[in-house]
Image 1: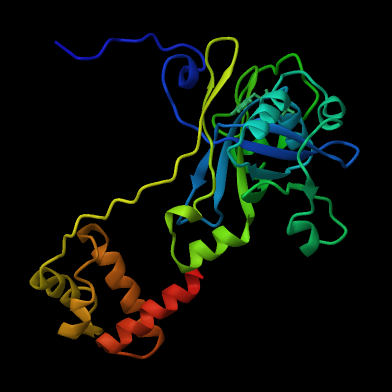
Image 2 (image 1 turned 60 degrees about the vertical axis):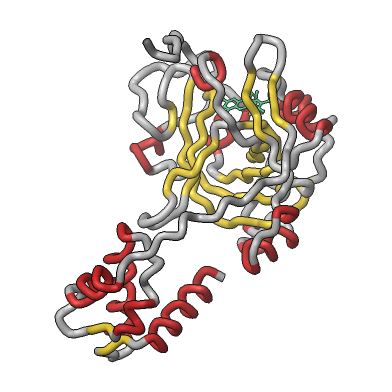
Length: 307
Ligand SMILES: Cc1cc2nc3c(=O)[nH]c(=O)nc-3n(C[C@H](O)[C@H](O)[C@H](O)COP(=O)(O)O)c2cc1C
């Protein structure tokens, strides 16, 4: 006998048929008059995270929302990660009431606004403002050429007719997906320092976790609690396994034992990628025998690139 019951999967299953923790993000987009309007969204997740030309987020939105209509007109947006406090979440719920025009919503908006980095770097262009109270902001551009969504236009507030795209642009009568290239990540100084110099529990921003609109009456969210850290399992590869892989990494470039020892903590699944990175560095620097000193140079270079 299973310890679970079968639950019917219905529309909006993430909030109607399950418990799905989500971030609360306030998206700034540009109205026709060039002003910024804000709408709260939770279905906003990392999409391209590595190995592509761009880094990108994916937003799922009602296609008649101000946010979707504005993105169809102008692809720029700001994803403002707002902190956990009652007034902020109450404002998100107010801004989330469907059908209000940007003018109605924005005249009472409690959030302070300021220019982001993109507008400073691209004088003469307009970009949505960012929310001062946010702990981080992603300034993004909708990649309208993906899935041939460049022909999708604003203006249908009663539902779009088919054909629909699979994953970018108008994807159903009332739905849209937007793949948003991340142009800049703006971070508050405390979190910026922590990311570069090492996190302490107190450095984590107060991130709310919301569970969406659940009982036809209210939105639900969790209060932030200080994160706990759990050390990774202490597992190291044995020396012969690293030596075996290192000897086969390249015909010309070889590794000393001390250099191999510096790879003992790399998880096995990443070992050949790590070795390939070292070989590429060696070839670029005319090195044929990689020593522990070279490995330290490679590590320093990676640390600098990350910074
Ligand atoms: C916390 C919160 C999260 C929300 N997340 C989403 C979402 O991910 N996708 C969506 O289509 N609507 C979402 N909504 C509803 C939208 O906010 C609502 O459609 C609103 O009208 C959008 O504002 P806009 O028309 O100014 O873009 C959310 C509402 C709240 C309060």
